[in-house]
Length: 203
Image (cartoon, rainbow, N blue to C red; front, side, top):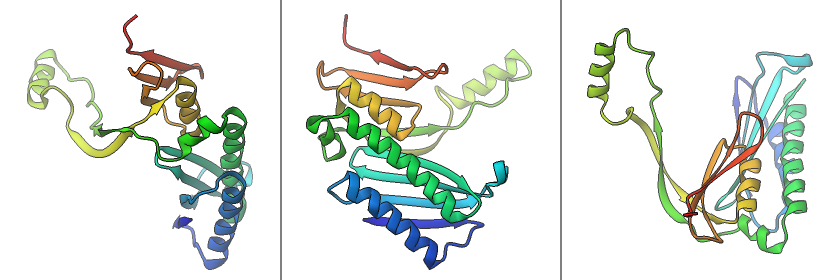
């Protein structure tokens, strides 16, 4: 298992790195039978909520198309990691309860479709006049400037698998190809906390 430990204004000595490796190894032995990759970042918690002055973010890759995130805060870096690791473990326990052997294969390689994900620059503040706004739109073209792009996969999933993956990864939206209908579909987190589903299959 490949683990990267980094700190932002936090010293990540060997004792802390060993604590992280041991904690994630325990999770791996309990929930997975194949290698994991994890990026663990420690930082100061500026808000200092309830005496918690350290924060930890865990971004864990459990397969080609399965990612999840855990966050924690504590009075020291070790406690912050333990809380973040427990959040990851809870999601994994929920995942294991809700899927059978067939659904569990989503953590392994499953053929997907190559795609490209783009990040667009945020729209500027509203123009002072309609004329200025029209001129700006003409310069900008059909969309805002692209500031980043990266390859991604569109996985073939059932709707329930897509919802579980949305929950595990804490993404706001997930596009997938419905394994039942073959049509592209989207699940997304609504402002009220529920999950929305957009199906492109003709009615």
